Image 1 (cartoon, one colour):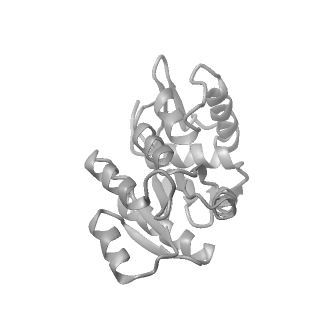
Image 2: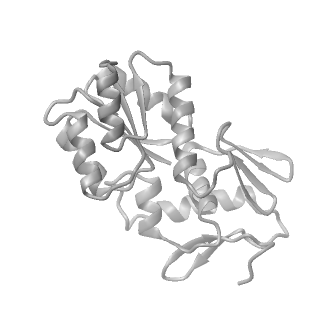
Length: 228
């Protein structure tokens, strides 16, 4: 999943980015309200971590403009301003959660998982397609009872496919969700990663779970419940 962190304190932004990437999220950062707003409007993110005190425009204005543009991406406000008035203002403007600084990363990660579940049709912490199970808390993939080793990008791609199983996903859609906004859509990197994942989740005598749809993209097929 892709997370946007809008935070002007470099050390805080770096800490959050590194910690989230260790949790296998795809993370982009912005240190200015205007830049953060532009990224949020023009790219798909699954959640936004938004500081209030920002150069350019503050977090409240960023949030107002996002909601005025009908962008419903879940937002967690991060701020050292821990007054009840600020909390109420942020929530009334459309924030999904509010976390005062300083905070523990474990709490931030738990709150992030919670709002991602609320915004998803999948309320469980485990995604399943036939005998493949993905635990979105431990970030572990299990096939027939055995753990599958995945890199961060492989995990992000497989999670996105599993959250949209049986749907045909175009290459541009996959690019928007799994890779950064400046990724070259003409690159064959998606095909490379699909091949890597296939080698890990498909047995020797099994039909491929991830199907190529000529001229369109890919689909993770639930081989039990779906026919081609």
